[in-house]
Image: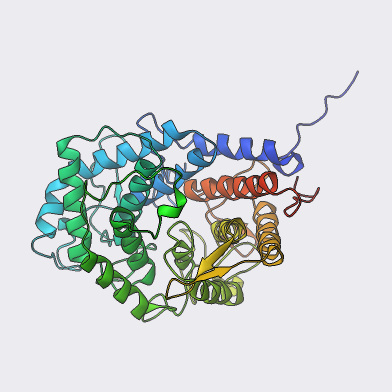
Length: 414
């Protein structure tokens, strides 16, 4: 009697199958309305807060994988859902764009950062909802999709809402918030960069236009003034290369490189060097120095702060995007050309971090939220980390396909 051969684990599959397996893992977190729960963890074991709810940021980053796989209909559906969530809280945008709520004492007046996946209502006001990067990411990616020709059939109400979001983020956008990691309030360079990226996408007079084959003007739809952009740059430059008064560097600063590409090449090099030198570990990237969060039921102890595999995917994408470009710009917007030797070096770094990322994925192909020591946390998989793995893999595959004489994926990955 023949014994059936065991099914191969994730790590034994070829790259194309690993991408497919990772996507299946991500799709299990997608709900019928187009959103993604942050993680399947439902807190039935009483060891943590339920993560099977919607974080608005997580939905937008989670659906990025769809775009890189060509599933634009799903990407648009997810952003339409975010638009619907914002509609439910439209009055908060209007009020806060006129009179600023107190960031600590009037938390219920801010747009919630997480909502119920069915009712889309606020779950709690007990922690810092005021996270400006959420709105910057929304404006940036929505504008990007429109410029790529994906029609949203906006209504008058939609434009009115987006105009109030623009007013909201400009009124609140360059002041203290709770940032990507929901801690603060204090000024965060990553939040300022997100807001600036969102405003620039709608203002754009050349900064992002090179990305698009066809010029589809959108500035008249949600007008952004030059003064908004100038104040945003001033606020961001004042913070860099640090993240905040208490954090000289932070994993969230990688967003300034991807997706926003809002900083000059020299700053990119500084940010990458700081993160690689001080935050990269065996299992992932620590969010910032002396980070104490490690999930419920887990304690850093002698293992040090938690390490997030998400950061390895993010570094892969950042280096992949540098390899993809023929050059960059300095602070004065003067062109800096990249030689093929430099681009191959970027690609090699991307491969290095991608290999490390997959080494820390489970045998089923899931990306854990974090590791404490060698132990993965209970938020496994984490939706936006799963998405970033797919994006990272596609960035590498696309580069190898576009420039086979310069970029080669080694057999160990392929």
